[in-house]
Image: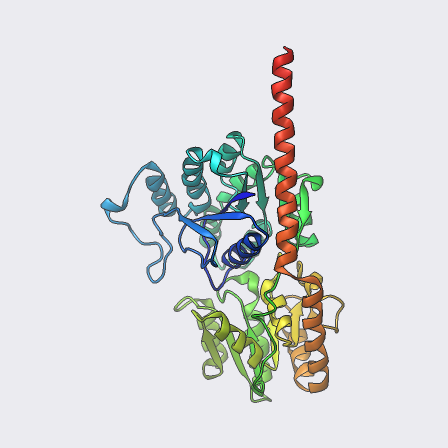
Length: 423
């Protein structure tokens, strides 16, 4: 099949969108399909055989100058104007404006593709694409309503809550579009339930296809693990990721143990994470790592005696599965889809109540004190990944979904033509 794979942003080394785009596209090509990725900035890293069509935005959130003011010559059309004005009023424009741009591109390339796969854009342009007669499949990793609830609950001021409500304004659009696009793929039963309850999508329209792990890249370490090292992979300043809970637990553990915490993330300078680290007096014992290659990331994952996923919610948590592939023992939150990924408590990970500092502290301490259980847990984690989480399997199931919607679209078209002739 000829597949157009759409993603409004595809950051290569962190963030589920870029990881999903890269590995799914590679495996679809390996199955013999033709894949062309359409993406806004940041653009993805893609493997040989996958074509990239860049759909440039104004790139208003780029590093190191997010929320920048573009020069007048950068504005190309009214979509750019809308993008900038939405940002100026504290909204997040990218899903909507990307969907308009890519719909415009596909309108003149309608005959180049057999199916379009929307990677959680859910902009109004997706409805335009469907109206062109292109079969459409949409992946919703998890409804962003969860992020909104947690961010609002942790907002320090009423003014901040108002700003957040404006930022998450795109969700009204996504909820409307999700109910109309037809076939929806998601990555866990937890996400399926959230899509039904928060987005109002009919359950029969949703299919669960778990994410995969590249088990040839994410492998057990060949070097000894660093004594006392704890690793976490999460957006440092996103309340949903629970880093504050981990930092408070780590600070308590540091009073009796020689420990080091490595956070694979880029914190906002002067943001809540940096401020909390300073308040807890652990600056010298917390290290940030970011912008590293896959091989360097695997080395970091495999260097830890214990890894922690303290999130308040996850639609899947690919880093959890990648850590399991590296045989790194885990302490994780009993939240969202994380229990689905790690399986029964104690085999591949210890599960704790999300947001509970004391419970997290005790679980990490117990695991640090039991090297034999850490080794058993690590091996069980890799075995579970090998048995359940494969990008090849993801591609096979996704291609079957493409075929389903393509066949359905053809059947509807034929019925419509026959009906017209009968009249």
